[in-house]
Structures are given as structure tokens and as C-alpha cells.
Image 1 (cartoon, one colour):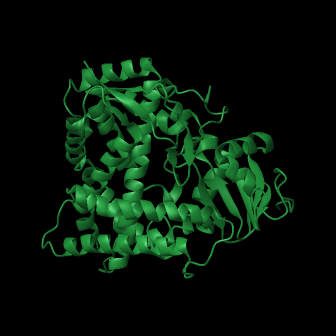
Image 2 (cartoon, one colour):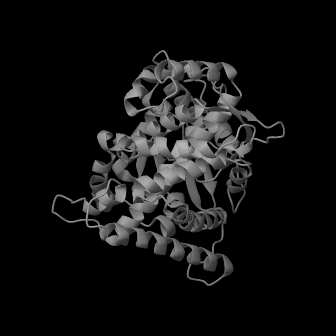
Image 3 (cartoon, one colour):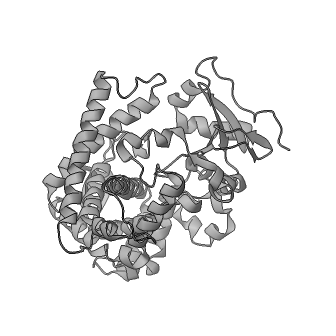
Length: 445
């Protein structure tokens, strides 16, 4: 029987609990929490009780073996005004049905069919670059992965269409992020300034996506984009996704499909720029396998060091750094009682930098993955895409895209960080570079 006592944790204020400590530096706060209080620690945000777990076996319990007794936490549910009931936010039978309908679009063979789009759009970006020019690495790869996501999702090539979609999405998510960080929130129906801005951005965004869906339905033929495949997807009883379900899934897939890959590439290139010996080994691998041509999906198995670099970059800077689950009933977890309504936090930032599993955990060392480390460490010591039944549906897509883009760009250019560059993390929904990554383009000789 579990103890009735709470896990250990830091003292907080009477009203806010530990919210101020969290907002002042959440990454350091989580890591210190795990260091000081062990594999199960307890904090409080206002009236909400939260456990942070960092034991891989307990993480597997929450994400896999007891997954049916946990739902997405309050933070993820807060994005429903934008994402609706997509795969990230939906629960129960609705989530299971949507996952079943969406899964065929992410089968390996279909994912690999998008490789030429990835290569072509990357080459188009490179054609615009000039040696010696100064760029923001993160902005460049965000723009590129956005173009790839919209082409593979909607079949869109036009930059104007991309802008019509991405600008209201950015505004909506910025406003949602501010709202989530605010302890006392006005109801969304209250016509205050922030709510009016948010509702206008969401309305504009939905109008754009509705237009894309309608155009997809009227094509009269099935295209190669994900929209076409989701429009024609049928459940076991012959039913298809409703218009709203399609919109929710496409919004979710766009966000998940480009943000995490752009961050993986941005942080990879930042780390590569600081480690010339890693860059040298990468270039040698690309010369040996590719000889200057764009990579294909069939090439990737012959590029293990490229895979190791991407894997290590996601360890040091995991695009998704925090997963939250809320208990739907009283549960036993690590000798403590997780009561119904409690939240369990699981942090990739904490576990990926745990010295129990990774020597010199703060150091970027791709070589650590070359001798079978992934098979020696516990399964949930490293989990950049989450785990269990709700593991990221696009993980194969993301890994292929990251490798193709990294090798395509890296064969022609490398980056030198600008002397005044200020590199810091900005942990919001994902782990973005706070001030971008300013660098100078150098043509690869």
C-alpha cells in the first residue's frame, strides 16, 4: 500500500506554491528538483499538486503500462482552442479512432515518398544563400521545415499561402503561451483585449485551413499529400473524418511536423559549429556515401554517424523537454499515492542529462551512440518522441527529414557562429533558441 505522505520537494509560497521558482528558470528548477529530491519529487502550482518522476521504470509505468489511467495534463489541454481535438489533445475512443485513421499515412513506404520533396525544397533554399552572408540558423530551418510540412500536408507550394497560414498560427500560439503562464486567466468568452486578439487569430487560422480542406475535397483525385490521404481514410465501419476532425489533425500535424524538426536541425548545427571534429567526421561520411548528391532514404542506413549526431543533439537539446499526464484515478507510483487529478511531469531535459545513464551528460558526444548505448540504457532514459501508445506518430518522418536536410545542407555549406551570438534556451511548448542562432554562411570547398 502506498504511503499517504507526499514525495519530498521544495517549500513554496502559501498561494502560488512553487510557481515562481518554476517560471524563473524551469529547466534548472526541474534538474535541481531531481538532483535534490530523487526519482519522485513533489511540487505545487497554486492548488495543483505535481509529481516529477525521473526513474525510467516509473516513466514506463506512466506512459505505457498504466497509460489508460492517465490523460494529457492541463498545459496540453490549454491548447485546445487552437488544436481542437487533434492527436495531441484528444483522449479515449476519439483519440484511438483518430490514431487508427491517421496511422496509414505514416507507414514507412509512404513517409519515404516525401524524400524528394524534402531534397527539392532544401536545394531551393540553398540556391538563395550567398557565401559570407549572415543568417539566423533557426529562422532558416523553421522556414524550410514549414515549407516541407505545408507541401506534404496540403500540397502547397506558394509562399503566400504559407504566410497566410503561419502568421495567424504564430500569433495564436504566442497568445496561448502567455495565457497558460498567467495564474488568473479571464474566461475566453470575456471580450478583453488579449481574448479578442486570440479569437481573431484562431478564426483567421481556421478560415485558411478550411479553405485548404475544401480545395482538397474538390480535387476529384487523390494526391500524394497527407490531406488527400486523411480525406479518403476510412474507419472499420466505413466512416471518415468530419471536417472539424480533419482540421484539428492537420493543425496538430503541421505544428508537430515542422517545429520539432526545425529545432533538431537548429541545435544540431549550433553544436556542430562548436565541435569541428564532429563536422569533419560528418563530412567524411557524406563524401564516402553520397559524393555530393542528395541523400535518399536508402542511404540513411549507411550514414550511422549522421544518425548519432542527430540522436545526440536531441539528447542535449530535446525539442520536447516536458511531458505531463494527469491521473484519472488514485494510483500507486514509486511508493507514493498519486491521487485523481494530480499531474505527473516527465522531463526529457532531466533524464537526457542524467549522469546515471550518460557519462559527461552536459557534453555533446555523438560517439557515445556508436557502440550500442541505446540497447544498454533503460528504455526511458532517452525518449525524445515520448513513448507508449501516444508516442509521436511522425517520429519516422522527423528522423528521415532531419538526416536528409542535414546532409543536403552540410555538403554545400557550414556555419560559423557570429562572435556576438548569444545562445540561450527558451522553454515554452518546445525548446527553442531564445535569441536565434546567428551565424555566417561558409561555402564547403
